[in-house]
Length: 247
Image (cartoon, rainbow, N blue to C red; front, side):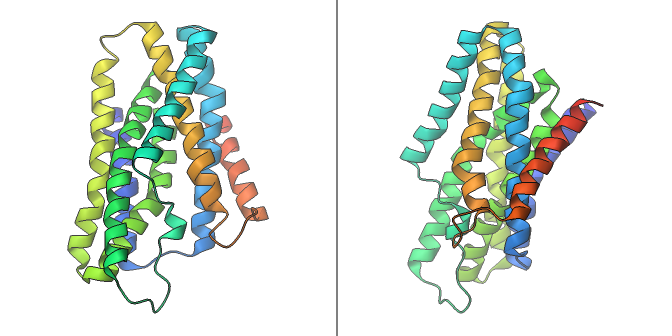
């Protein structure tokens, strides 16, 4: 039970830490790009090395494929219904005056991230089935740090209210916790085939997030190619998962 609380705590730490950084001091872009790339490496490695093999073991290859597609489609529909503005394109430029548009975009981004974080919480709970929950929690927490920064920073930029901006942005941690707890309850009352589909769906979600958000954002808003440091950060994420899996 203690490990469950630890995993849950790490899961919600990402948006909270990001929200705090956003109202204090923004880290360098290169650091954030490398962190995003590392998180992409972790998520992709977990998906291909742990989640998908476990899904096939629990159900079948066909159900695994169905699960992958369902997970990716869910994230795609969320992106279409509520566009998830990439953090790299939201940060106010130095000297930029606040406008109602910037404040409104910050609120839309907050709402979009709120809905996107629910399946991420369920994904972490899925890791308790495969034994990769802790690694998933760390990767998703890293992924959510820049999102926390980019929801609290524009709001603080406009309102000048540090505590209020931090608290409002930190609410994006709530759906992560809800998704985690709901999935934990569901796993106690469903068949192994359904669990297999959910595990594969989690892989689909992780692959989609990596391809749609983490990798593009790690290039930055001005660059179209990865730097060598971001490439090695992704590889380091893969190595991190492989080494932890061998312990």
